[in-house]
Amino acid sequence: MGDSVVASNRGDFKVFESRDDLATSLADYVAGLSKSATEGRGSFTVVLSGGSLINALRKLTEPPYLDSVDWGRWHVFWVDERVVAKNHPDSNYKLAYDNFLSKVPVVPGHVYAINDSLSAEAAAEDYETVLRQLAKTGILDASKGGDFPTFDLMLLGIGPDGHVASLFPGHPLLSEKEKWTTFIRDSPKPPPERITFTLPVINSAANIAVVVTGAGKAEALKKGLSDEVHDGLLPIQMVSPKSGNLTWFADKAAAVNIVS
Ligand SMILES: O=C1O[C@H](COP(=O)(O)O)[C@@H](O)[C@H](O)[C@H]1O
Image 1 (tube, rainbow, N blue to C red):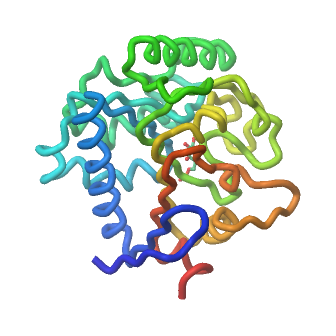
Image 2 (cartoon, rainbow, N blue to C red):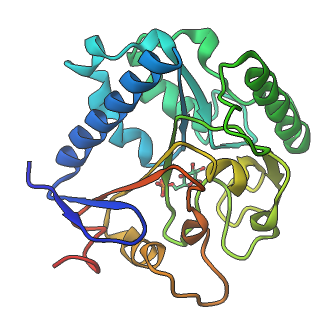
């Protein structure tokens, strides 16, 4: 399949010859985590990003994954959402539904979309209430101690500026230490109003996969893998699971500054 694993002190870093090879390896990885979670706790809690990540999940909608994954035990969340209607072209829910969720037999009641009838602030509060309720019922693992839930898998993309979720470089939201979800009204990337998981929730996940494709992300990926600080840490540099695993999936174009 032409992939290589490159030494990194920031988790497992995998580089792929093509986006197709990356998508196959990502499908294997997600299916493996789904199997261990469903055979263990009985459910698999997976958090999606928007953007290019969704296309990288496409192999999961095909055999053998379509038939072998226990989709009925999946519970699906969003790491961030734009404050737009669910049928708006900017909606992360719409992107995931059209290209992924509508093609696999996930239970509709296990898909936790952000409420699109509320303001940014109210939608963030509402989503946190939903998550806290799921933590009480045991769907969401809150057994590890600490103040934050442990999602089985957090699937992240990164922007060319090094942003993750809707956490942007230099933004005060990067300092949030208590809330599970929060909102932004001045996102530098449109649309300006969004809600997002906070860094403590992201970093409490059992597994975080960062998926990076294309030459436009090469600089952000290089910085994301390094400890060097220029004008503060980039959001991607602040992604560092407390006790979980961090795995990077990059194509050759994105990894051009790291491997030759
Ligand atoms: O605005 C967003 O951007 C990031 C990165 O998107 P990409 O298309 O450059 O991969 C995405 O991860 C996030 O969920 C989204 O809201």
